[in-house]
Length: 510
Image (cartoon, rainbow, N blue to C red; front, side, top):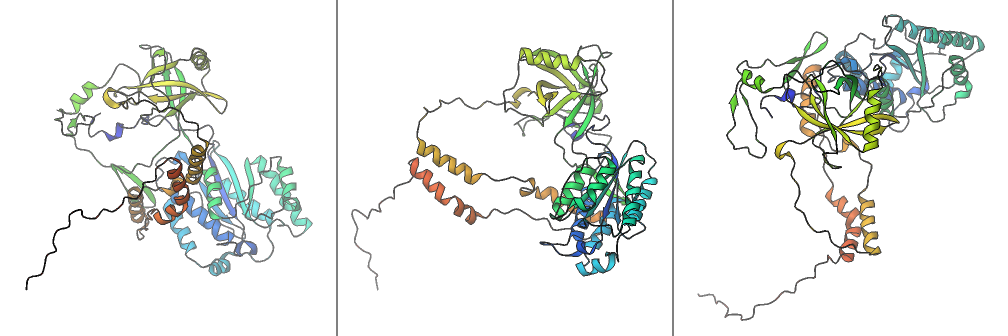
């Protein structure tokens, strides 16, 4: 591993285009109803405030997105208004600032400012939303209208209903996908929206979001790309770069990288600029578990001489053989390999079928750059969502793998009471895990500092997770005592022994 080479440390460094067939870019209009019911408090917040919080959470999560292709542009429109609250060309920073200012208002101030007066002209509102999409010239992107409301009877008379349904008929011609998102559980589609979906000819999805967290998840699933997929070439014949298969590397894990970069504001845009490096870089070889060892120093030209120039960038097949790693041995983030839908020849499927039939894997060389150091991986055939894929697992090098000392397993013991005690302990320790329970405090502080600089606002406090030891002991005390008893782990209290030959007491000399 080379020192001063953090930009090449990851196995996910392919600089090919990112795209995901499952993620279809779309211009999204988030339409929020300003019906009086949206300002009536439910549980801890009003539905209107929950909508603003969800939009703020969404925009806030986009500040650190480095690739704009991984999310869809969105606008926010309020009923009764002629212009959008947030347009497609608004910067993310301005959007966050605007929504944050709105959230600082009281519920009464929001109601006085935004609650619509009288009945809603739904047909006119649909026309206004359609005009927002007219500014979109792209034919590649979809157009999606998400209408958040708790009013299941938005139409006052037959004439208004006729105008609204006629307007909704034009959505298909303009390639606009419509979805109603209720904020109350008692929302009834039969009053109006069943007929609307029948005219659209699209399947109705009954989704209800009653709080800001649910709304955030719904909007994020529509606007953000869930999985990154990158193009990669697979070379079945070593030494022949003219024959290859088009594949995709599916990255299930991704991290926000803040190192070696600084972010600042330039007008209304977030600028991510790489810190200029020193031309006189000195590289060194790092030794595993030998921090104090003398490392070899060499310059950039000498470092490039060690790189591989022969193999092409991508995945090159070396041989077909048995698995090199046992189940559970993982040295880097696993990646999935699947065939590119644009690939015309069926050889990817044949490789997969033969590996499954013979219980073999593909041992390959992986190169992320040209030139670059070589990484050895094995491709294990798997079936994911009824689709043929390979799991790409990196093979260890040198002393990266250390085997535990072999010990003899104890003889199995049939003891139902002990099994029951262990099962009870497992049940007590089982809970639904959320990554938010264990935040990276140091990383969150870095994000808070950068965000404060970008928004010209005070730095947000970062909450730390503290385990309530007393409460944990209270929950586990009974089951732990049961295990101690069943496994004979209870220590007998030691009897205190007095002195055998007590000497004369020291007398105080006056």
